[in-house]
Each structure stands twice: as C-alpha cells, then as structure tokens.
Length: 201
Image (cartoon, rainbow, N blue to C red):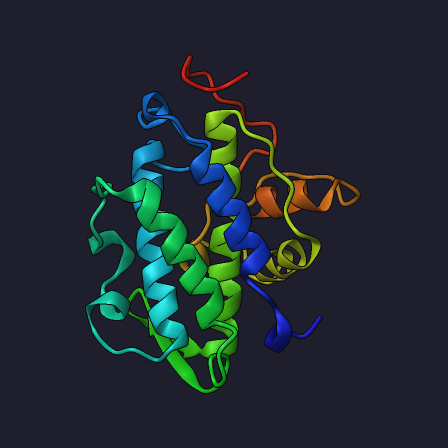
C-alpha cells in the first residue's frame, strides 16, 4: 500500500459510527487513554478540524495550536458536529495536493505524506479507545490498521520519540493479531475493559 493512496474514509466512518453510539450517561466513563469519554470526543473533534486544515495547507490557529493547548471542552453540538468534521477530514485528504509538500498540525510541521499516517493512527487508536470505553464493537479497516502499524512499529521505544504520541510499548507476542500489536506498541493494553457501569454490555 502506498501512503499516497491511503484513504481515511473507512477509519473516519467507523469513528462516526462509534460516536453515534455513545449515550449521554457514558460521557463521564473512563477510557484506555487519559481522560474520560467527553474529553476524548473533544479531542477527536479538534483533531478532525486540525488535520482537515493540514491537508489543505491552512496556516492559522487550527493547525498551529499544540494539542495540549487545545480546548478539552466538548461542544454542546458534538453529536452533529463531529461526524461532519470527520467527513470533511476524509475528503480533504483526497483532494489534489493534499499529500504533497510540507504541512502543519498541532504546531508540528512535517511532510504531508507522513502527516496522513499520523491522523490515520489517531483515528484507528482513538476509535478503539471510545469503543472500549462504551462497550461497542470495533474492527479497523485493514489498510488503515496496517498504516497504523507502520507508524507505531517505526516509532522508537524511547521517551523523547514517543512524548505526546504514545506510552511505552507493552509486551506482545509477535504472532498476536495485528490490532493487538498496534495497541501494545502504542502503549495500550489490548485486554483493557471498561469498569464503569455506563458501558454497554
């Protein structure tokens, strides 16, 4: 698979389905990542806008603001706004010139082709975070999962290389399912389960 042809649509559509399945009483549920479901949803909303604008080479607050400085408050209209932002994100990376040259997101500038893998990984991992936190099914599209694996496996297991991206790698068998290996290399426990009573069965 060429990164130039990686399509974010399957990952974005899966994220939208998971977002649609979240109930109001699950917003305070814990996630495998830092923060609760509401915080994760706010992050997904923000990254969708930031990486959409990165594809279009927009220079401004949406692309120059570091993730830690971004708002963690969930918009009251999140149920309608997040799916629209995700659809726009996938479409933006299909546009002519999106994967060419350099671009910026989260205050970091890098080749656009690499930026595409970063946002793909964000969608793959955070959709799993939200699915696990709220008891929903999850199955990543093969190409999106493979691109995520390439990113996590090529990121050195050193604090300075993983800061702001992943936690330390967790032990995982070489023949474990690809999703489990992606999660472990991203610092997630593939066996993580929600303990909140708000998670669906």
